[in-house]
Image (cartoon, rainbow, N blue to C red; front, side):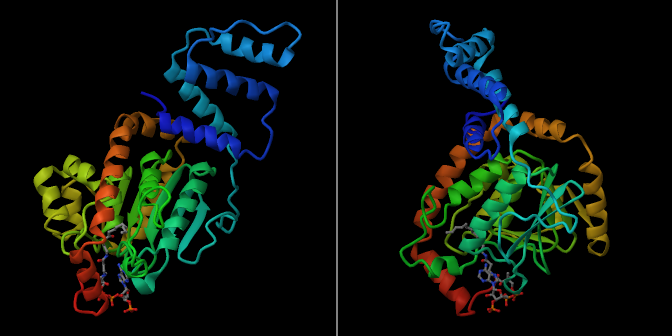
Length: 354
Ligand SMILES: CCCCC/C=C/CC(=O)SCCNC(=O)CCNC(=O)[C@H](O)C(C)(C)COP(=O)(O)OP(=O)(O)OC[C@H]1O[C@@H](n2cnc3c(N)ncnc32)[C@H](O)[C@@H]1OP(=O)(O)O
């Protein structure tokens, strides 16, 4: 097991964004690893002696001998990771980079980058702009010098899920594919591929997509005030965030059905018994206990944690990407259904609350 094809492609793209020239030696190493990863062992004739650059590249590729393609791919990803720009944390804890958003905050301290949903007046419901800001924040977090990335919510709720106005504000329907107005597929793919340990600090009730995504996190710590609710059927929707695959795997099919089809809201302790939540803390000491724990974990060597995550997760990645693609295809139809439109209209006319 090693870096997936997707990891490799991400690394190729990240290399293009490098602000500093990594130097000729590194560029030649990268060239050789790229060729080995994509074409296998060098099998082309050595360039003429006077063509110094081509000869140096050929020598580097040839020197890799019969190194397996998978190993070359992994070495390439590791080398690009070691070169990636690393936005520095400031002493105030704010990262100067994206997102420039009031509703999605990003701070970095003690080796932990925290992404906070900050729209408490609307129970941290996620607008289209927030989906984009979360993507930006995750891309920045994947490259900064923190070792762990944390998601949490500000205020009473962790999040009430997708902002239902996303449906009414887009009467033609939401396009959930790569280039649609809500690139849900890309959004969920980012969670699948996230390279560092990803932890949810669930400070209060969680609804919809903010529950399903928990199946892609590496640890979920919850206040005993938190609840977990995926009311897809009553909204005329279908499961997303890879939950159609992760939930049955985590909690068994019948418990998953109870949540994903019948919309049963469960408590933090029930979610913990089902394996969706790692540990539950009393609300009064939640923040103190969880952050002390995370600060200690963040002191572990970052590469070891990243590689351990890769070893644990990489065999599932292809499956998860396929599940995500299929869930998005089905959901795109569901959002145009009469059942969904009526449910959303009822919510905004205050006829229906969860
Ligand atoms: C097609 C896109 C796909 C994207 C991916 C798909 C995701 C699926 C999902 O996430 S489904 C889950 C969607 N979420 C909900 O259905 C929750 C809806 N909200 C509620 O039922 C309730 O608001 C509540 C139970 C979360 C809280 O109830 P309470 O009575 O305590 O508070 P209010 O209802 O008065 O809420 C306060 C204000 O917040 C607004 N609001 C809350 N949640 C949402 C939301 N999800 N979308 C939009 N707006 C939300 C609510 O309208 C109030 O606003 P107001 O003060 O202006 O009236």
